[in-house]
Amino acid sequence: MCRTAEIVCGKWTLLLVRDLAEGHTRFCELERSLGGISPRTLSLRLRALEDEGIVERQTFPEVPPRVEYALTAKGLALLPIIEGMREYGRHWLQADECADEASRVALSA
Image 1 (cartoon, rainbow, N blue to C red):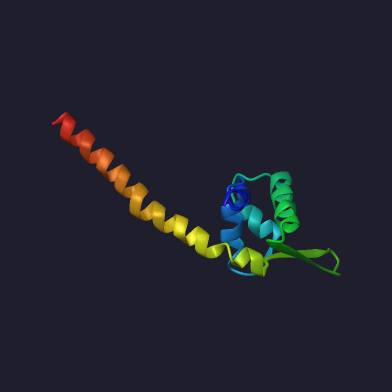
Image 2: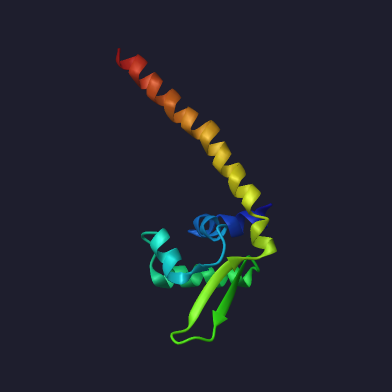
């Protein structure tokens, strides 16, 4: 479990996997989608995910060279985990925020 958390909880990792779940994606598309990520950081994260076997990189012999990234079977296996985290947040974290807001309103009345 700890090893999985190390991989999944890396900065930008969840968002990268989310974007790559849509299929083959180019570097510039990922950069646009992840507003705020520097090209260097994106490159490092993609390389780290490649090293883990989560992302595969395909280079096309064109001018200029075209590179696309996609999830491997190992990367696709992360999608239920990410969906579980999304559901947890929807159910528990938004409810906590609503309860906190309701408490603040009640106390100020």
